[in-house]
Length: 221
Image 1 (cartoon, rainbow, N blue to C red):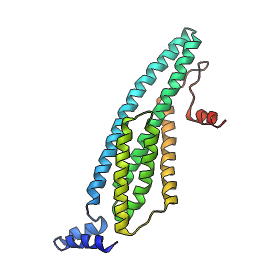
Image 2 (tube, helix red, strand yellow):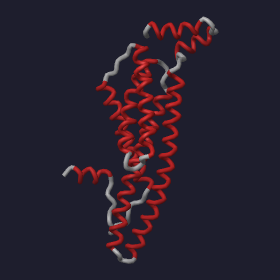
Image 3 (cartoon, rainbow, N blue to C red):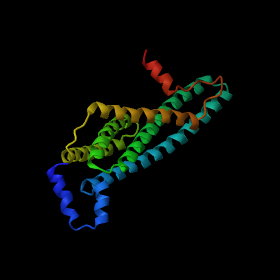
Image 4 (cartoon, rainbow, N blue to C red):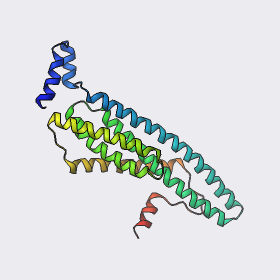
């Protein structure tokens, strides 16, 4: 820890009871923590908004699904195909939103476990990377989140830089990118499973709704 940060901590200890000093040795106070807590609350607010968006898409999903079944029972294959394609787009957006929500939730959990300056640097690096990826993925689906996530990312970057200066730690960018990729991959896997569990497949004989796997396969050709 730099001399500047050390003086900041030590200047508080003279007036503190011994028990408080012990607590501070484990979790030192400072101006970074309120800002970090504020950033976490802003992320949690975005999670709530994504939950609301998921509910809206779920209602739309059910309505379109019912139309597909209705068209198919009337032997109107053309309309059933149109609705099936529409449902595929809706579920694609649902998957993106659920994926983003899960990734942000992981970031919140990690940020809430930060207790030392070194933890701040190593935790915020992947967090900022995940926020940028989530922000880019939501641009077309949930544009109102773009600016807010951008501001949160900038705030966390500032905290990370200050914490790095105070602790003397430098970022290992390879490790940061790998950690961020793991968070995003895990969120994507869970999101896909949630989609499968939450929404029914069309009965045999009806137009199929592409999954994330079939979308990736088609994009590779």
